Image 1 (cartoon, rainbow, N blue to C red):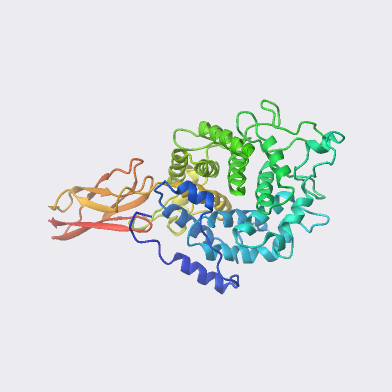
Image 2 (cartoon, rainbow, N blue to C red; image 1 turned 30 degrees about the horizontal axis):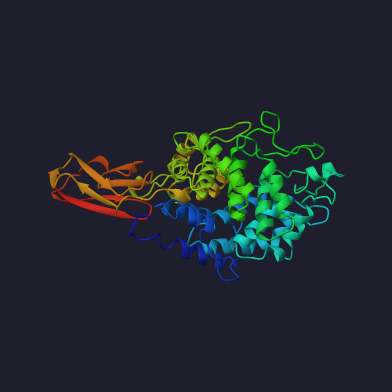
Length: 470
C-alpha cells in the first residue's frame, strides 16, 4: 500500500466471518506471512502490498467451502496453489486455514489411496502445503505424506556400479497408478522441497536427480526421460530437453524454499537465474514454453518471483509491473463489469480483459482467472511502492463551468490503477514506471460553487477543490 497510509480494511474480517459460517474454520487461523526467503528478498526493496493483497482477497472469495471448484468438482491442485500463494500475503491467515480445513479431510482424493493409486507430484505438493499451513505433513488427514512420497522416490542402490540403471534413476519420483506415470520435473522440485524440510534420508537423491534436469544453459526441462534411458539428464538440443520457463521458475522457487545451501544447489540457482533474466523481455514479461507458447501473467509472475527470491530485484520488479497492468481496478466513477472482481488478474491483457470489462468474467472463463491470479499473487509481491503519499493538485484555483482544467496526481505506485474524477467527468489513470506525477484534464460541471477533484485507488483517496463559476 502507499507508504504511511491506511491499510486495506474489512475484507479479511468479512472472509473470516464467511468461513466460520460455512463451518470450515475449526482451529485458530494459520499465519499468513512471507517465508524467510521472501522476507530476505524483500528486505532492501520498497514494495507495495496492495496488488498482492487484493488479489489474495479476490481469490479467497472464489472459494466454495474452502475449495476452488471447477466444472468437474473440487480442484485440489489449484486450491493448493492458491493456498501457498495466499500464505505469502500478510493478514490472510484465515483464508489459509479455511483452505487447509477443507483440504485435509479430503487429501486422499488428491494424493491417491496409497495402494493402487499414489501420485508422487501430488504428495510432494500436498506435503509442501501442509508445512506452509503450519500442519504436520507426516500426519496430514491421517496420511504420512512424507513416507508415501519416499515410497514413490527411487532408492539409491547399494552397489551403483552393479546396478547402473537403478543408479541413474535414483531420487526420481514415480506415480503408482492404473492410468500411468505422469510425474515430471515440477513435481520433482516439490518433492525436493518436501523431503528436505522433513529431513528425509531420500532428500539428497531427490535433489541430485532434480539437478540433472537442468541443461547447460541453465533452464530446467519439464519432462523426464523414459525410465530405461541410461543418462536421465537434460541434454540441450535433444528432443525432450526443451527449455521450460515455468518448470525453471518453480524449480528455483522450491529449491530456495527447501533451504538447501549446498554448493551444487547454489550453482544451479545461479545458472537458472541467469537464464531467466536473459529470457525476460524489456517489458518485464515472460513467454511460456511448448505448444501455444505466449506471453502471459502465469509465466511472468512465476519468473519474476523466482528472480526476486534470487535477489534480482530489478527483474522481479519489472515482472511485477507487467503483471499489475493485467489487474484491472475499475472502481468509483470508473466502474465496469469487472468492478465486483477487483483484485483478479487476467491471463493476458487482450480481448479477454476487454470483454470482461463489458460483460464481466464469463462462468466458463472463471477458472482461467483463478489460475492466473493464484500465480500472480507471487509475482506481485515485488511490485514497487509509490514514492510519496497520494495527493491531487488543481493547477487553477477557479474556472468557468465547462472548462477543461488540468489536475496533477502524485504518489501513485508504478502501474497502479486509479480513478481521477470530478462531478460529471472522470478518467482512468495508471502510475508511471518512474513514479512521477500524472497530468490529466477534466471538464468542470455547471453551477456556481466549489467543486471537489478526487483521485481514488483500490485502498486510498486524495482530494482537492476549486471554485467553479457559470
